[in-house]
Image 1 (cartoon, one colour):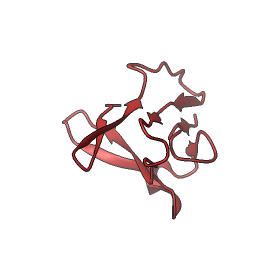
Image 2: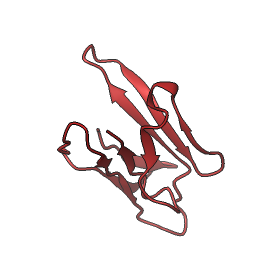
Image 3: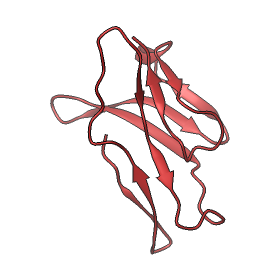
Image 4: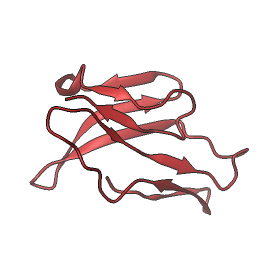
Length: 99
């Protein structure tokens, strides 16, 4: 995963925190953490988190979209294998990959 600093109206906003690496064991569940740390929690709210799988050729495929208003949408190849890692606000945008 690649973390990007968010920008809001030309001002530097908070930061997306993800680990540099996550170790997974074949056949077991793995948590992919992702957290947004706001600089101004009263003005900054996460409305959508999109997880992408980067392919060998440099392209990417959408895995899941977590949206504050519309809930989550898991792409067909990942149905039943991707779960939201935390409940509540999207500032914690972690997902769980099953098996």
